[in-house]
Length: 284
Image (cartoon, rainbow, N blue to C red; front, side, top):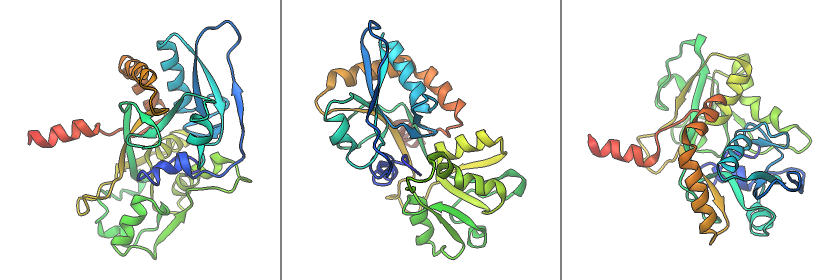
């Protein structure tokens, strides 16, 4: 996806780390006299996650967190491409990055505020009833998948390649990001492909935007415990900035329900938190 699949911690960190695009270094500051600022490192053109019109998931969550802290949001706009932590966050142009995977080492991360993952999507009117990567139908259906992602690798391990249509994670800067992000889901709706394997928030957002009745199935691969398809999503601050981390975690806990409503508005497919999942397994 353009700038935001931070996936596999390498691929998911793509959203943060491997995004081509025009560098836009611009600070959006609130009017003078409004008090303290929550200085956010924002990507100006990365829907459904963020944009400089403040229409994305992370824009709305940032507003909720800032309000809880009695602050206003001030953005430093910069495409979330390779080097963004060093050149933007660590250079102190801003103090917090939203939408990073828990465990992303270049930053100090907060407790997660949601968990999502890659999903398998198909039109409900096709009545395919797919539930597993091992479904024999996947050997004959036309599958769209973002290349070099966990689902792509899982298909490869199963020898499924000839019927696969690849979609790039990165886009040519001459194209509008939204067109690229939505292409795989739009092709699915149009019937160009039968199944899409895509990062969940992208699937949910564009399905909702198009008003398309789609079946969305979280991807898992029990045959390979090392394969990761789901990720806890956190906020990141500079290493050593424990005070801000603690403040953000307090606000995230207090605004948990509000954040949940925002994620639902964008159609983000949510999964149980990793700790919750582990507890459930232990209880069996």
